[in-house]
Figure (cartoon, helix red, strand yellow):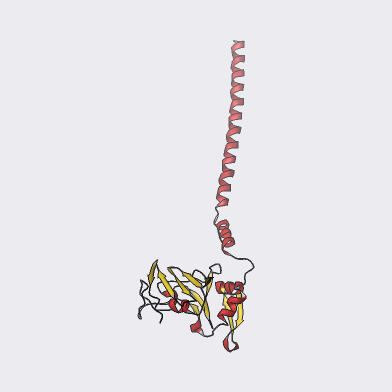
Length: 215
């Protein structure tokens, strides 16, 4: 009987030690899981996501505003993408467009959200007012005249159609680029090119060549 009782006592003690070890291991797993879950939640928290978005869309070092003397010595202040573009423009681009025109009709925001500033010999325009949105310079000439030609939705010239950014070509997606005698501006829905040697202008809308509408 004494031997049996001793064996039972030893067996109970062993089971107690095993239970303690199991409880300890279970607690460690629970803590690791909790820690991992907390880390995952922190990595996708709204505040962190917002910080990342701001960091990606902001452009450190670019001006919030640029003030230029326009016609009649009136100060014109460019903001957002227009200010960023003017500040980054080359001296040749600035000479090409001249100084800003004044008056409400020469600058502003269209119903579509497009922002623009007219200059003596061109325009700076962007899809929207976000400072991170690219703005482009379109200088005066046949390309700009063709863009400002009223057109039907398919791009064919039409007196009752729409022109400029509201027309079928949309907003510019490049400045004027030059390759030899060829000058080209790309738009959301097409391109306009001019051969400066021959004066020929080619307009495409959604991949289709349409009449330039120029005389």
